[in-house]
Each structure stands twice: as C-alpha cells, then as structure tokens.
Image (tube, rainbow, N blue to C red; front, side, top):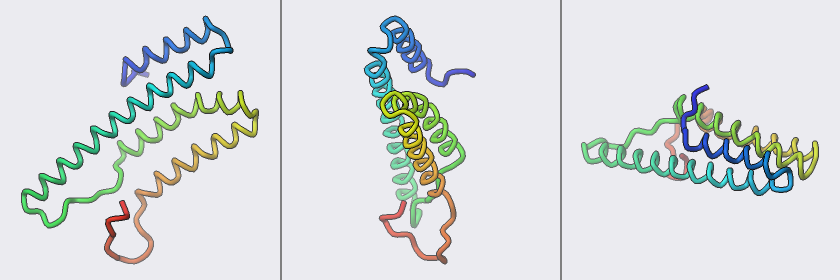
Length: 138
C-alpha cells in the first residue's frame, strides 16, 4: 500500500520506533502526540476543502446561478472519511484497551461505528416528501 502522505508516514514510523525504545511507559504520550499531528493534518485538509467549496459557490453565484449546486458527499469523501476513521481506530482501540479493558474497546468501537453511520446517513435521500431544505440542514 502506497502512503498518501509520506510526511505522516515518517511521523508514524518515528513514533513506533520511539515506542520500542522507550517502552510502554511512554505509549500514551507517544500516541497522543501522533494523534495531534494527524488532527492538525485533517484540520488543514478540511480547511482547504471548505475554502475551495466556498470559492466554487461564489463563482456559481457570480455567474448568475440562482442557487449554488448542493450535492451530498461523493464517493471520495465517504471513502476518505471511512479510511481516516479506521486509521484512527487503531490507536483509539489501544488506548481504550489499556485504560478500560474490553469494555473500553467496545465503547470506542461503538463510537467509531456511530460516527460512520451518521456520516453515511448524511448522503441518503430524504424520506419525507419534497420539501425545501433550510439553511440549518447541510
């Protein structure tokens, strides 16, 4: 499998090497540090996508479109969300098992499944007739 982000892969490799060298005493700190880096990377990606989408909407409005096109999450977004959630599930599972044994693992995975279910449900067609969407629904 080819890494999509070589810098993040280097960070993960360094974290794993440090964990082997330092032992289990520093595992939580190392995992937390790596997760912060992943979160920063995700934040920058989301910010970039939001700016791009806003620019596209402004362009559509400037061109005279009555309403900017709205579409649900595409395959790429759904796949990316699922992949990121599975990548983050590994350290979350380790932390959950370390701190709360099997019960913690179950709670962590229920959260992961719940977040993915909500994200997947966003793209489903509405079941309640044809009504206009408000600004609050997106």
